[in-house]
Image 1 (spheres, rainbow, N blue to C red):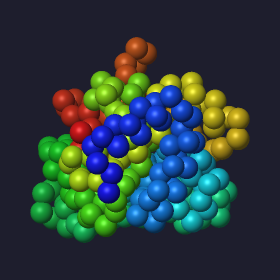
Image 2: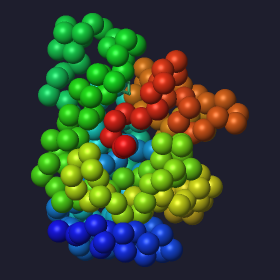
Image 3: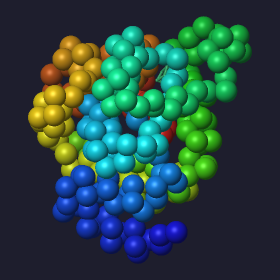
Image 4: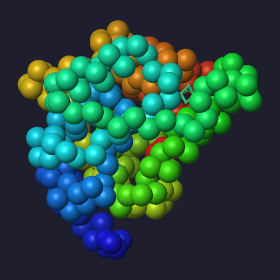
Length: 228
Ligand code: SF4
């Protein structure tokens, strides 16, 4: 177990290093006790590539809300074929039909926090309860809510180490990496969707807006509840 001082030192070390260094360190340190929570955004695909170059059997999972765009499901299959892997699909214990019966057909329109809690936060919490560390693709530039993210930090909400190798990267860095290695990404990114989540809650952004401005349009909400 790392203490707070060690985590701070590691964070400072990886602040000045390449993301691949943080990825390799985390894989070597935690092995199967760490998993990458992937949402298949552009940055997450860079991390998939970095992880699988070091450890082809590393744990990579996604929170399948059953509400992704068809383009996202197609991308998942394409990446699985490219890397010859099967990403772990983590689903809510409350199927969509049950959610509709209990709360109505479109809970996301009336209470997106509850919908995200049922479909994302509760399944994530269960998944993380078996781990010592998790990795994410969050970047400081994405939104003010992420501006203070560190390369390595203690996740107070879920009680484990959180590794964010790409915190310093810009969207330009991310696209540059994908183009350099000719890695596929979601075609919706080229249609005005810099951040892609569930279909009912994801809209294109306008010029000058931050990358997550198209998520939950019309609500104050800017995060699913997975990141503080
Ligand atoms: S993003 Fe929208 S549809 Fe997806 S879980 Fe959250 S509220 Fe529900």
